[in-house]
Length: 206
Image (tube, rainbow, N blue to C red):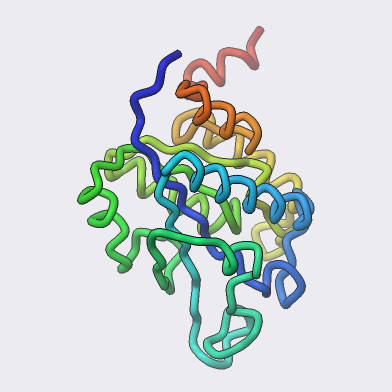
C-alpha cells in the first residue's frame, strides 16, 4: 500500500537513568532497544524525516531524571546523533507544555513515529495525545521498553506490560512495528498495517 504520510520521528527520554541508572529498562533488553533507536534515527536522517528528541527533567532531589544529574542526561546513542528539534518536558506526554504540536503543524507533519522510554508511561501518553490531536501514529516496539511494577493494584513484569500495551496500541492508537519493518516502509514508501478494536477482539473468538 502506497504511503502519502509526512512523518516525524519522536525519540522520548533516552536518558542514562533508564540504561544504567536508577530505573533500568528490562524488556525488551536495553541493549536491543538502544541499538534500534540509533538505527531509526539514522534511517530518519537518510530519508529526510525530522527527528525530535525529548528529555524529561525533574526537580533536584527526585529519585530519577533529577536536574543536574548524570542520570537525567541523554544517553550517547541519542545525544551524539543529529536532531531537528529538542524539547524538555516534565509531564509524561511529549506534547504537554512543550510546543511539539505547533512545531509539527507548522511543518505539515501528519504522522509521528514514537520510540524511546517507557512504553507504558511516556510513550503511551504521547501516542494517545497525538491521536486525540488528529495525528496518525506509528510505534517502534523494539526501540522502546518497560520496567516491572508492583503497587497496591497488583504487579506486572516488564514483559507483561510491554506486550499487553503494544497489543492495545495496535488495536486503535498506532501502527505497531519493528524498527526493521518501519525502515522498510519508509524506504519503499509504504504504509504500515493498522487495526481496529473490533477486529482485534473478533480474532480472539475464532
